[in-house]
Amino acid sequence: MKEIDFNSLTVSEETLKNIIQDTLELATKRGASQAEAGLSVSEGMSVSARMRTVETVEYQQDNGLGISVYFGQHKGTASTSSLNPEAIRKTVDAACNIARHTSEDPCAGLADAELMATQFNDLDLYHDWPISTDNAIELALECEAAALDYADTISNSEGASIDLGKSLVAYGNTHGFLQAEKKTRHSISCSVVAGNDQGMQRDYWYSVSRSPDDLQTAADVGRRAAERTVKRLGARKLKTGQASVMFVPELARGLISHFNAAIGGNAQYRKASFLLDAEGEQVFPRFVQFTEFPFEPKALGSANYDGEGVAIQQYDLVKDGIVQGYLLDSYSARKLGRQSSGHSSGVHNLKISDTGKNFNACLKAMGSGLLVTELMGHGVSTVTGDYSRGAAGFWVENGEICYPVEEITIASNLKEMFKGIVEIGNDIDRRGTIHCGSIVLENMTIAGEG
Image 1: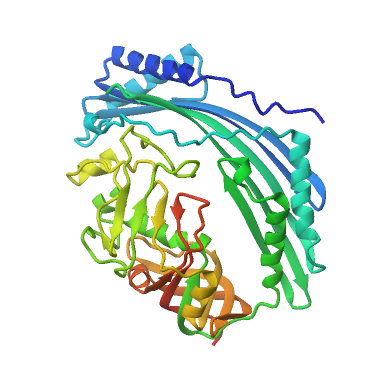
Image 2: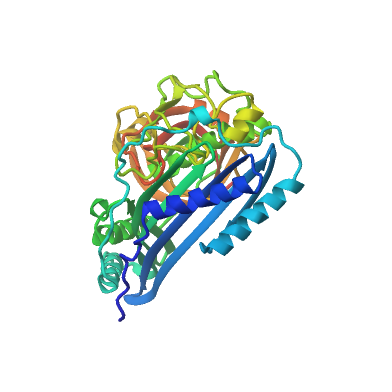
């Protein structure tokens, strides 16, 4: 098999900065009063195996330049995947032509100049994975084999994959802000199917990190996927009723993301949020704290500045259960008569405080109820807060898992769910920008049989 050189991302940060600078100068010469541009160059490799054979080997290489220009408060945006000078010139001209024909928007423009980042921490975000294609294939096969060999009931596979990615991203604007940074993101994943005379079940597991050294081993990922799948065999239905509900960490962070959406600037200024004007409101119990830690080395959500160059700070989003502010970019901030909070790119390592209990202790604290390990459907409204989703998981009695359950729906309202949080575990899942443990809710409606 032909070797793929995964170390070919040789373009320098200085080269990208120069392209950004030239693009901004060109926009200014065309008459733009303000301009901003973002440029990314990325490449990656993805290898997958299914049923003990190689299924795909893919190599990706992408680049793109996007520019926004402002003629007063008229905005135009254009982009190109070609970085040759002629393509860039045409892209700038296109953005300028669009701006000349758009309506004036009093809130349009760059983020305020005084908010631009001026200090830059070393966040340790770039860790190359010098692995050959053949070795990546071996890892994918090893991962899937660990799952297939876990138990006789593992009957099929949706595959195991090894994914490597690295990128160089630059951003600049006519305030004089110009920065570039390199990042990596690698992952191992596996999904398998188990079956017996009571039916078939599927589940998965994955590990993701900036550094390959911080990934779980391929065999561990495969075994974890198989273990989760086998445990779901023999799933039953539940009777309709009310019960306590516990969300595992990877699903608990989804609840937090609904909160983030509701207090996002766009939802607030559009008045399309169940937490409209919630700043200063007691939304969670007093033991709940949300704090961003944007400068954690190697973390997936770490950054020095957001997508508009605004400096990012450690930020208390929720303190003693009370909402401290909104997640604002410059546009939504102006709509609300405020300043950007540095969240045009979302949250940055938002840590949810825990109540000091591990996973098993949270089960004990819940006593009896539903442990949710999978959610299906999109029945969540951040306008009304209504929450209704298909679910699967395990029924718990006296703090012990009794049997798997499926084909149920859990329902409530997010406001009631947030206020009904009784435990947050210290089994924190860090595989994303929200770091959260298991969440136990006091009560939800479970729709099943009868």
